[in-house]
Image 1 (tube, one colour):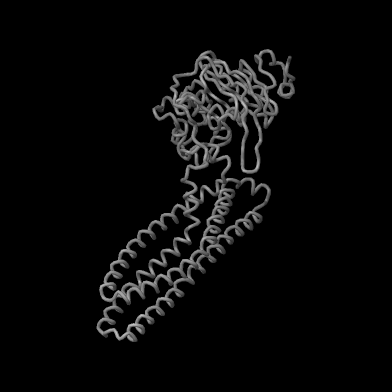
Image 2 (cartoon, rainbow, N blue to C red):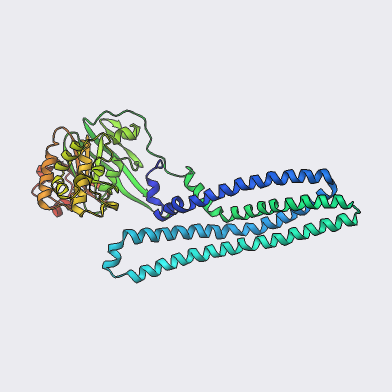
Amino acid sequence: LRVGYPFFLRQSPGRLLNIISNESWRASDAIQIMLSAIVSASAAIILLAFLLLLSWRMTLLVTLGLALVQIAHAVLSANLKEPSRSVASRNGHLASQMLHLVHAGRLIRIFGQENREKAMFDTASDAVRRASFALLVRQGALPPLTEVLHAMLFLAVVIGAWLAQVSFPLIIAFVILLYRLQPHMRALQGSWSQLQGLSGSLEEVTWLLDPTGKPQPPQGDGPFHGLRQGIKFDDVTFTYSGTDRREVVLHAATFEIRGGRSTALIGRSGAGKTTIVNLLCRFVEPDTGSILVDGSPLDRIDASQWRRHIALASQELELVDGSIFENITYGQDAATAGDAEAAARLAEAHEFIERLPQGYETLVGYRGVNLSAGQRQRIALARALVRDPDLLILDEATNAVDGLSEAAIVETLKSRAGRRTTIVISHHHSTISFCDDVVILSGGRVKKQAPFGALASLSMDELYQHEPLD
């Protein structure tokens, strides 16, 4: 939750899910094994001290033998690291398959790929089983081997003491203590092999917890009390970087979003619209250039204070698994039932909510599965409107809404004119019709910024193809 958002753009969700839900428990087992090993080591030290008091010569011989057994055990246990890493890796791949089966249920069925997906899941599951079996086989071979080595050491001590003409009572006392020592030494060796077997899980958990090399959360500690003049992008360039690619998606973008006005960002897919939204929300930071808010650099403003004054309604933002009321008031803890209803009315959601059996207490289900796409979008819009933000960002927020509802929502957005700032991203001419300004993007570059009234007669295709003026 504290890591910078770009981390999630580069990492596999399956790997992260596996670490949180599976490897963390195995790491917990490793801690328990370590605590047990400390107890066994303490008991072994006490028993060795008694053996030393009985006969330092025999104790030296035993210690040398135990050291040799431990070295042999450590050498064999070292071979457990690679299969342990394999188990962790294959578990991550299996978690990815699980996520795919849950999220892509409609896709799989409409294209009749049930058998293919089952075969892929079986392959991933079988790979985990085989890797786990290989690890357990190697771990299972160690205890019998060390048992044989301990028995040989035991016999060697008895024979050696007899040949050295050590008194029989001393031999009996020494053997009894040695017999009590043996289980603790076996426990230590077992703990070591178990820890080696869990090394893959420990490495995964350590990687997740280690902040080194991970994106930092947004910096800046300056106060922010509200948007007044507007926002300016000044020669902003941004690159999505990954392990095998660096794609520039915004090239030296310069434009203004004037305070109290509505600005439409339009362009074909991949033009850079969503990247601008991510930059404004401080999910990512510019590579070069600056974003100025009322003349102050955005990266110097405290991110949490800035986000309290903005709201985002996007088709990519999910609903939480709770009631409609909980979804509308998400992020606005002080909102009352009246506030939620008022926001729902503005978003054209109140009527359909009232028709539901439980009204605002209706559960939306996982990712809003109990609602239609249009209903989900209207609730998401109400969630943004209930904050009455200084800056409202609508990223394809009404593309699943019917024409009548969209027209009513547009009227609602018009009411913000003059007192609040709105950014609209849409491929529908009717959605951006209330906007004061338009910024046309193409290939990550700003082609033109102009009052929308000057371009209102053009269709969306004509707007996309509009050539910049000298």
